[in-house]
Image (tube, rainbow, N blue to C red; front, side, top):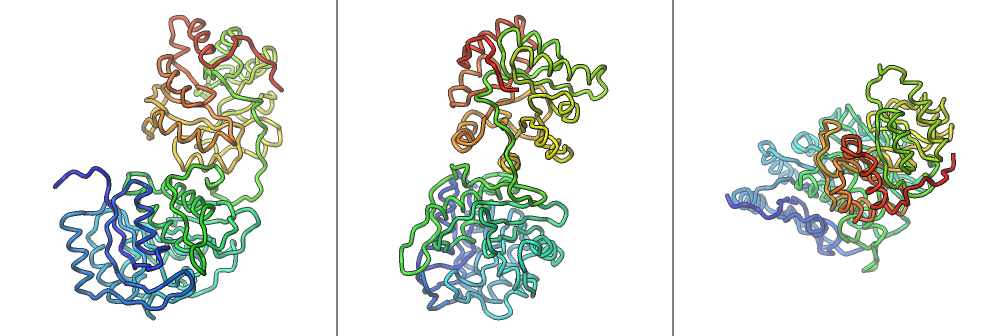
Length: 498
């Protein structure tokens, strides 16, 4: 088999002669994510921006020929299913999926944006039986979920139960999109679950009539990202940001609703969704960090903190991983006192209760700590919050908390802990900076040493967090002086607001 220069995804869907939805939207989306798109056309529609005039379902033999032609030469790394307008089409697609080994996302298209019916009577029941059990993800909107469930969904309170019930009916996982529900004023909320885990994805409420192809674009973006090797949890975040960007930039082309725009990789923090396990609306931001963090050593004792603050470091983290460490409480209180003495920002890793009691400048939490820490108590105490992130899912989760800073990494292979995330590199770091820096203070983490710090800082980030490059150096003071100079710091502490 020939090697492919880029991944291949299929769209098995209907053709939209108006160009805004169906395979036309899918191919534009695949192209934006660097994926080669192949098509199995299930129907030809005669439609424009305000009406569906005719739907011609693809004959069985023609459908089979398309699938066989692609399967023998251009196998898919992921498949997106859209309009499957007849029982015959559903049955044939289901038969193929029964032995297909890779990712499948099904957008259960039933009605066009302009209001035209796109499936025959009885198709939804066969879809639940023959196709949805083979789909890794289904992406119904509220109207489509109501058809599949046979009941009304009355607001956000019903969404979680509806998604859980769709899983109970045979779906492997569900992203129930809430664009058809009334907005809460600022955001629209989608909910994903696989029956075990679940979370909300909340994006901006974009006031536009140009929504044609929204569902097609979302599901094909997810398929493209899965074909590129992303985890599903990250693909959902990126795809929602992509659709938000497309809605924000959409324009009307005909007499009815315009199509979602296809404008490349999402780039704005305004389009990044907030991810929450439990939906909270109107979260207050944590206090800011009084400017860039600069050089950010991470050390395991108050002795190290004193040694480095004397060098002119203005931001530092106490990270004691051993919870049975002798005099843990005393170490934290001494670190906080040293921060006050030197006018520096001292963050305490993990031990937020003691940090509150000691009156620390801030705390730093990893993703696993977010599940158990009392974030409301930290916010009430006026402490800053820093959050580690390693993926789009984790950045979206941090974004929902409105932290004081976000740590991005690992940029390079790291020695400090075993991680399931590979190094992201400076190119991905630059993408994060372009998206996040207008709203958040940022620091880069993971495997950064003196030699690498130049490339990291060249991305425009204002801070490198470093551990072994400092603590294992033969002359830590000399290394710190060099790093402070690289960060543009003058080697003397500034006065930091307590």
